[in-house]
Length: 134
Image (cartoon, rainbow, N blue to C red):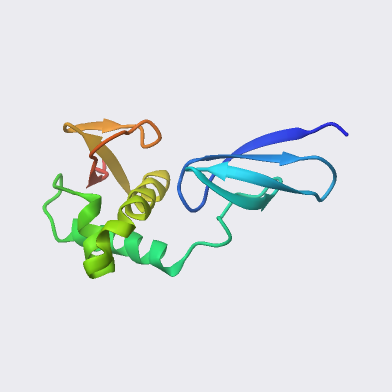
């Protein structure tokens, strides 16, 4: 049987996912953002559903940015600390993923060295800034 592949944006991490299908209705392994999950072909992978923590991190990013002047930035660690308390380090990658989802939604941009960067290409420290209107 011939395999087909489709690419989509992951609903959880904001990265690119590839869905492979060997046959009609078959489940395929999906890789996105270094994680493995299962997704039906044609659907966006959710890594078995977005966790409540993911939504808390998104809300924390929005709240932190709303408290800052337009043009100001935050570090993903600020959102991780607000949600995770003493265990904030474990939430660093989920906080970066939350930022990527907000970029995909058009709410924020990710910067490095003051310049807007592609979230998929960003390596190392990043900052998060609200998008400017107009």
